[in-house]
Length: 319
Length: 301
Image (cartoon, rainbow over all chains, first blue to last red; front, side):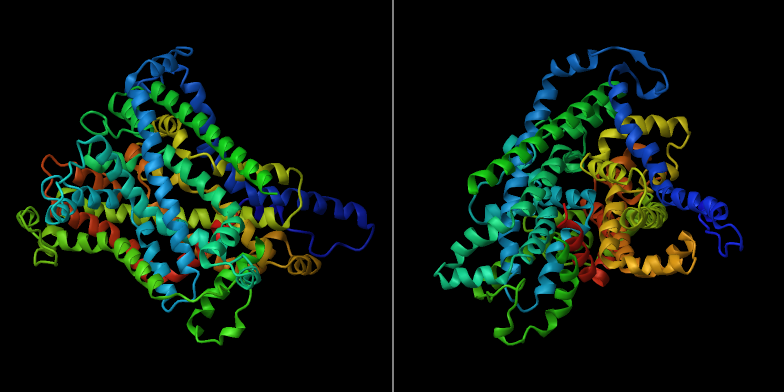
């Protein structure tokens, strides 16, 4: 590490006029902190920030996968093409519906589970670890398993349904059913994780609040509604923002659900993330894919601002 | 917010002595006892969380025809090793496991080291531009790195790293989340006096880092390391862009296994099992610490 030579302080300043001897030491001291930051910011700038910003520039060019070092200026043509492509709008719509289908039940269930996990229970550590296990699997593994469970002809879920006398569902070709299937994978993987985050938030709510609510005759439900939920507000905002961002870039689940980048025969569950991949690595149009990335970025900023505005509004109306 | 950090581990340590008298219910401990209904719901949720793992084992140990029978098998069968052998042959899974191990270990070491260095600087050193640099780091945590994949891909092609492991290692060696995590940890865990004392003794900053900061930071580094290892092992989008099925990580191999022309489901499940097993083992051994780490790291957002 380069900083070992610069960071050393003068071990024993020689006797004599102190100030000139100390000056280089002080300079080293001022520079040393940047030495500690250098490994992080060096790589971060090269592989994190630069690509993020350069995406905008690439999106204004024609760039093809096979000749990716050649860039021809296009202006906003990639964007106008995008806006006139029905598959783009389809992907945008699907991203929204799958996002709602996966985020809303996931967070509600997580809130309920966290509430239960916050009780005094036997085996609470076991429950916590078990609920987090899905988080430990990869998108690929989880999706392959669920794709099997959701199989039309031999899937376990349809087998259970038909043994209950319900008509089997085509979890792949049917638009809503397939979007439900994809959302189920997301929900399965992330519910336990969010439950733990809520649990951590709940544990910082003082117990006295519950006690005084109980003294005032509040039922468990009223305590949950009037003590837990308001106390958790910052945590809830945080999980909503993070899950929304996650939903905006959903990619692996729809890619592997049936194993093609189109997102189903009629693109019925193709998300923006998958559409980006299809443009770039199936059709070789990197420039157009960059335009999709930039649209996704704007969408995320918009959603974050929207979340912040809603949170600020709710805070005001409550006071 | 900060006191949560110290409470989460303390609380999980206290779990075994749940027979403490009821009157000792203090703040941050729920005054409510779980009734039978709470247990029923939690057991139900646990079954839902765990069943897909069990099903993977069942499907991986049966033959394809047994899986497509009118009444599917619900218990493990005898074909596990045969199917694993098939999976190893079809999708380079052996090579993929090795690749994933290399990538995840190197990335974990890089992230933990660079995050501890930068986290220490942000937590305890004063320097010009500290606030702005920290804000930049935290701000970009919210932007998914996925959005930079196209230029990143062009860079990798230019450096002639496509299909080689450095293409997945280099971009992941540092993490904004890691820096933030270690900063939060060290603000709490490392008393200013300790750093000052080191300075008074005339130790260089690097010396202080090695003999004072590192020992204090170790628990935080361990948690960050586990989370990073899991995340890197499971990473999907960038590896399938940067690598091919000839030199895959486990996730890339799983993708090609699932995309076979007529995939043999029991072989696909055998591959899934192999790919998931290492992380599950880590999880079984360190589950409690991982739970604690997530609860610590997450609240601060």
